[in-house]
Amino acid sequence: MHPSTPAPHPSTPALKEWAAVVHALLAGRQTVLLRKGGIGEKRFTLDAESFLLFPTTAHSHAESTRPEHHDLLTAGENDCRGGHVVIRARLDVVEAIEVRRPEAVAELEPFHVFTTASVVANRIDFRPRRALAVLVVRARPVLEPVVLTREERFGGCVSWVDLPVGEAIAGPAAVDDEELHRVGRTVRQAVG
Image (cartoon, rainbow, N blue to C red; front, side, top):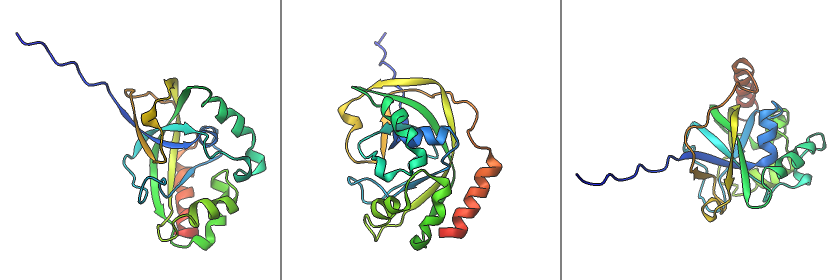
């Protein structure tokens, strides 16, 4: 009898996102993600339609967030203290929309926590030949948040990381599907 090979550790795709945005999504205060890709990528690709969110704070600056959402900054920072991160959200992509009219990006403000000026500077003007993607997402809380030790492989300015966790069971959506489809229609009409 031959010794068996140990089963590989399960992994789950996770999208890196500001920790404050994780809290905004779970509170129903944000329904879209604005993606163009990290510095280490040529462009953003949607590698999975259902994924966890890996919270970051490297670029979470108060001046990029509208004042009425500043309370989320502290909540987000608490998820990234010391050498640990807390995984607390699973997202499903409802719709992916390419921004064809970036001059109308201010019309998206009801669907995210950022200032329009920061969206223009950090998303539209960053690599201007690349299109910005708006992901309308269904956010659900992970019923048992996962605390991970921060590892070097989670670093770098890239969009996606594989997390050493199995399927995380998620609770009910923060925003219902009817509202998310309305958001998708509004985004398409504004910038699509």
